[in-house]
Length: 93
Image (cartoon, rainbow, N blue to C red; front, side, top):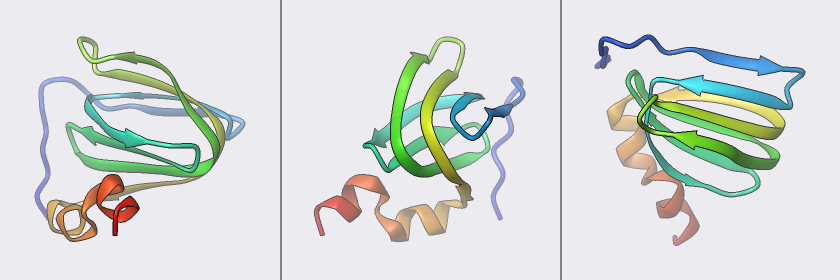
């Protein structure tokens, strides 16, 4: 499994499954009310839930804040991410 590590640490913080902060984010690949897909320093991170919103995005700091009911956080390696086609790939199948 390929692991990307940069000089900055990655931190995932959740409060009551409804508010989250993620650091080490390079790009928001896409989002809707049930899924947020992030490209992070450590690989693709997919957050699933209901009523999800990106409330703050600061790519200079590599930080994203989200809210909604968070059900799952899943890291995918490059092969898994490519075969899934990303969020938009699944939307337009």
